[in-house]
Length: 116
Length: 114
Image 1 (cartoon, each protein chain N blue to C red):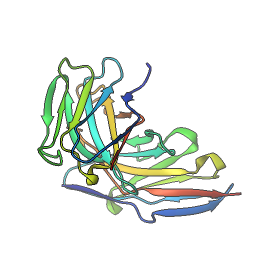
Image 2: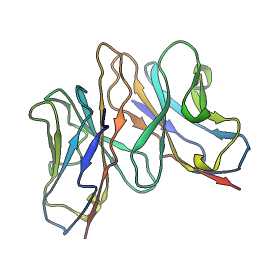
Image 3: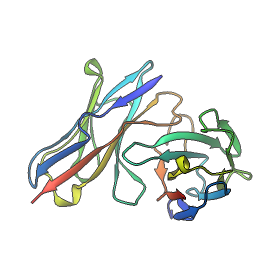
Image 4: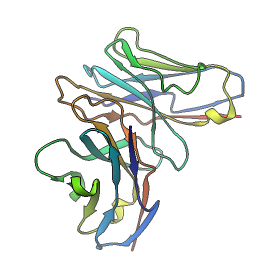
């Protein structure tokens, strides 16, 4: 059990560029979540997957945000045409939730995005 | 809809003193409740959780929390603070039975004074 990993840990980009972040969940975890955390705030839910199915995406901040989990393992979060307001920490979490058990979410170290 | 309120964005205690971090929640269905800790530039680590059963739950590093339904509270305590407890603490809630995304409070920064 190597924990949730995220890549890159830091990303600096210019306004208008596209960025993509990767999350590798704990092996065999069926659920994967994306959150955004801005300075001085708690994490804010964006979207989640159960296996490869994206079950909730209405909380994605705009149509510039999209996420995939094509084979039910790793996931990517893409932000198109970045804006300065997108600067934040993007956190990924996974859980092995089956029949109401294993509800705790394990978080990765996050990707810190800075948009210049 | 659910929400979490953490009273006190900053709490300072002396080393060895009692730690009390407050969390109140609002939920239309019975909730599951969590406390997470975040160290600088790191992800969140689960301290403890309440799902069902005993309302006093014990977690890692000597922390515990009590679920009080009548007060809609889930305050975090530790009898004796240690310097290594200095971090940011987040309370979170999710609907029971269909636990999905977590709704977090805005966090409490704990400072431990020598």
